[in-house]
Length: 266
Ligand code: NAD
Image: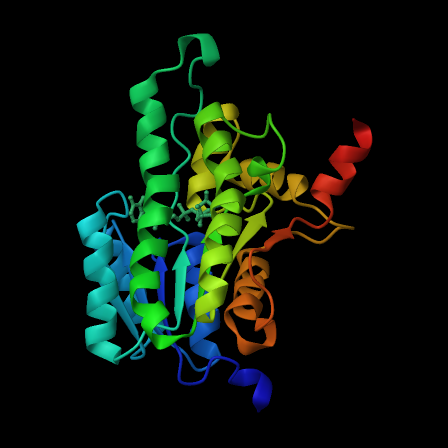
């Protein structure tokens, strides 16, 4: 059926693909006919997940903070599949849950978060563009966050890193549109992935894991329904597919109205 093959023949590389939003998106892309390579720093989990995803999924160990490893992940994907149509720069970290305030901020810690969340994304964009520009086609996606739309939803380094993503996307879109390559980002609200659950466990040390899940879900609630990993995966599917062929430089917010609601209170 047509809606089951929206990515037929396409090849996708997803960073941070071993867990959470990346894994859900890998699964969604595969269901829609893509071949998928997941790149992740966690090689044990990455291999397990690639096996679980099936024969059209492969794993490459990659730390997005190291440019040569990102370049290698792109080159290995092209060597295996002959092309790269979708680059999803998704890997990210939160940094310390309770960092010092701005007056005492450890700039080495700030650099560590920026290295993964910003430099790592730029490395992914750069090396995908190296392959996509000559092909005159491609879709690049980045995971931003609603933490990049308003202050106070996370620690300063994380918030600042996520504020930069829509700017990077806009800047790069002006160049890549001339080569038939699109770039967009997605800004999700809190979803209880391992990263967020461990962050919230720091906020609420006495709460059980079930209660942590409830708290995160309550934050992302829209009329009683919870935001799930698959909601981000569906947004990524749309932006990656030809249905979004005229959409570039965009920040697609997946938050059930969370940021609209909060803005009304200001
Ligand atoms: P997650 O912890 O489930 O997955 C993150 C994955 O990235 C893990 O597999 C981890 O091993 C990998 N990773 C970490 N550092 C890496 C590195 N240096 N190189 C390669 N891989 C690395 O978390 P998630 O929630 O799925 O996070 C994915 C992205 O979504 C992040 O960019 C995060 O900031 C963003 N995000 C998440 C939420 C949420 O509520 N879950 C909301 C907004 C944005």
